[in-house]
Image 1 (cartoon, rainbow, N blue to C red):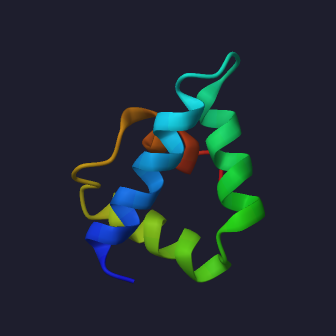
Image 2: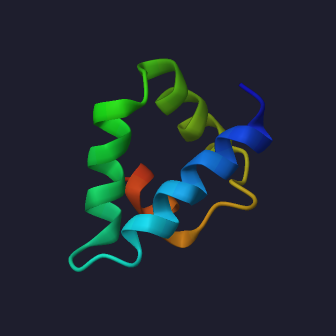
Image 3: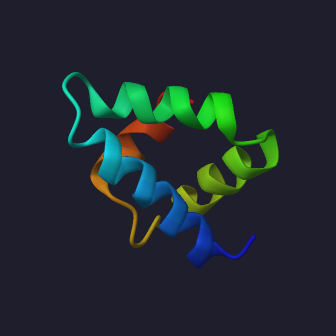
Length: 66
């Protein structure tokens, strides 16, 4: 998947969980574990290693929990 689409999808997930009570990063990480296939999660982690431009802070925090 293109990095732009991955960033958009991750940020959409974050937009939802950022408005919910509780720790958004935990909920985002759980969602990514449940619904993203391993290749998508690996792509996200690789993208973060190269700077992670455009990702919301809660996505970055969630990635640390993957």
